[in-house]
Image 1: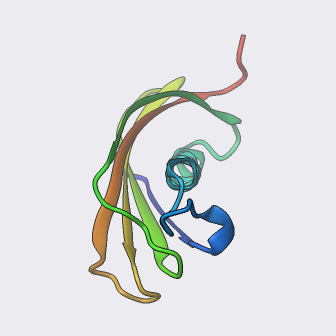
Image 2 (image 1 turned 120 degrees about the vertical axis):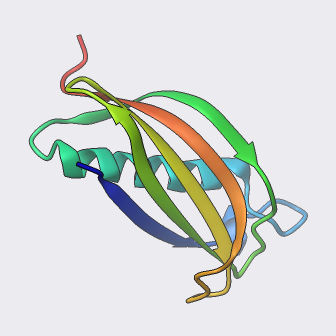
Length: 114
């Protein structure tokens, strides 16, 4: 079973740095939310926690006014852990071919932490 998720967010002035581009933490937050939603689709009755950001590559800027769209795909998982690859694209609203702004690999813990 393959679970995917898609999430979006507008980059406003409050999310930007002095150069008019999104802070990296804003991009990571969107990627993390999208990855967690993909895992929650597979395990809807279990809590899902971020365990580790394995890798995060920033590949291009997100300008104020742009829309960030993240898509997540579970690469591997079992009953207690899942590794998800998330791609964040940027562009104008409705632009499905935007530039890749970041690619993240995040591991999630499924169930209660002990």
